[in-house]
View (tube, rainbow, N blue to C red):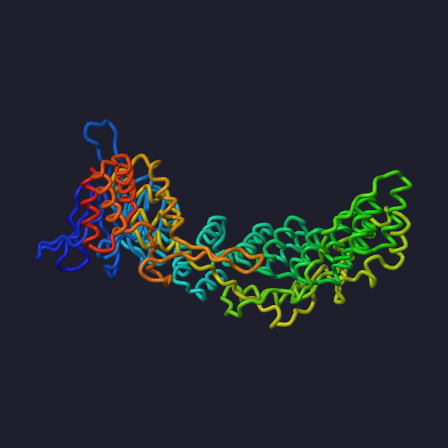
Length: 606
């Protein structure tokens, strides 16, 4: 028997559970499944309690021990908040406000109500805590001597500040404490704070990965400049493309010399002028496929004919010329085919002209929501303002990035002539605002316009209706409608002891497919999936899916089965009864009467 946190309440312990009991009314207020409780420790305001399991229990009839070593944190009303399992015995513990500090054989550890744990320090000898303060713990050793041990609980306080979203306190701890190590970085990534982890990382690769994880294109780009790795630029281009930042995507493709993707990017953004320059670049590089693709993107029939002729595909060149009305070219190529005794291909009478769509909207980046930046991004912006910032607003110089002059020198005299004019100078300048990488190292000395480069938080994706369904319900049908067949089968196994789920396969798929509908979207876009809600069309925190099978439908099927049985059609009647039996586990009763009817049906078939 232990104190219950307030007058008039007791905690009663058994081998398998602990009960919150009120002696005056002789009522059990709450109970918790925790075995072999040895110590009960309340915090200062009696809002939380730590239940410590210390000893093992011998299982009857078996020659081995069941060890229950760990801590369970519960609320005042015995609602379980978290459970921590230890491999060694917990010696003692005490609360320091919201942090539970406990000792094992060799360590002083902490535990938070959200389940986070960690090691504060090691111990030479076991001690037993009598009181915990922010920087000290008061203990007794095994010789009953009083001792005071200094501790540093900054890590626990840091996690509490993150949980409370007290970003000012978090930034203060980052600047003034010595939090470091891979464990804190992994913790921040798991909890969804990669931008906080950026402050603890000096390794460029780790910093680059964290910047991509939190969508911070500016930090990722500055890190990529320092690393000068093609793989990093490729990953940066993928993330920038996901955010619709076409300028960074263009720069990434230029750095990695990914000409195919660069041409396709210009096609999608409607940049016809740069597509023409990409065609000239492919011609300089003697890239036949690149020339043909760019000619297709531009809709240049004459260039396609010329490329096919140079590639030796005279028949295809003739078809392209005659189909596009280039009669003089077609006659010339036909003469070449006849001189080499090659057959003249026949022209289809229903040939149609295929031209790329004319770009209507030519824009650089996708529009972003103007949201207030948080503390961590403001900190990075301040660091960027005090140092050199990578160019985001314009494309970098092609002279250093693509580095084609050396290749051109090896290709022949035509390329040598181009080199005399500067190669990638005024003739093929992709952007008028170019900076030489040899002098600026790809960075501006002056930051760009504040409004143009102000960092914005990417809107966080909302919770899907399927995830809400699983959170709001413990019914197998709701989990099957959400597509979580594993948890649905677990519920059926625990509730009605279903073992063979193969006969229910068709019912699972029906419930899942009937929980949503599909509406056609715009041309060249995917169909729009619309989830069907039960009771209300609004998707809120308490939404539930609409289930395909209802109780009135089963009653009608049951009546039809009886009629078939009376007519002597036993096989059809049996099939309908079997159908009802499969529907019962995945039906949701909308009222008490429907629940009683389901129970009656279930007992009839059993």
